[in-house]
Length: 89
Image (cartoon, rainbow, N blue to C red; front, side, top):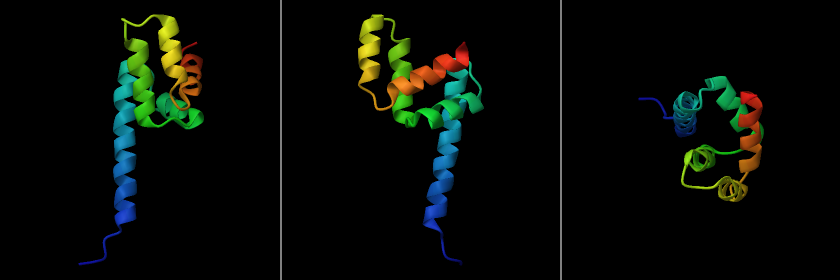
């Protein structure tokens, strides 16, 4: 049996996870996979924080100013929001 390249396995798992994440988010936001990939890449936000932004924006119990405050507290959150808005309009 050959040597297992653990780094390569981890890379493939990460790529598959990221692809699945983008697929699910694109369905929720009605943006395509490339749009989501572009937003995440340009804003330098990670998947966890990107999902946190989506949850904040979708939370109907929060007023817009509370949503803005919450998003400001997320690393690269405003960059991601600007990327989303840029793709929509």
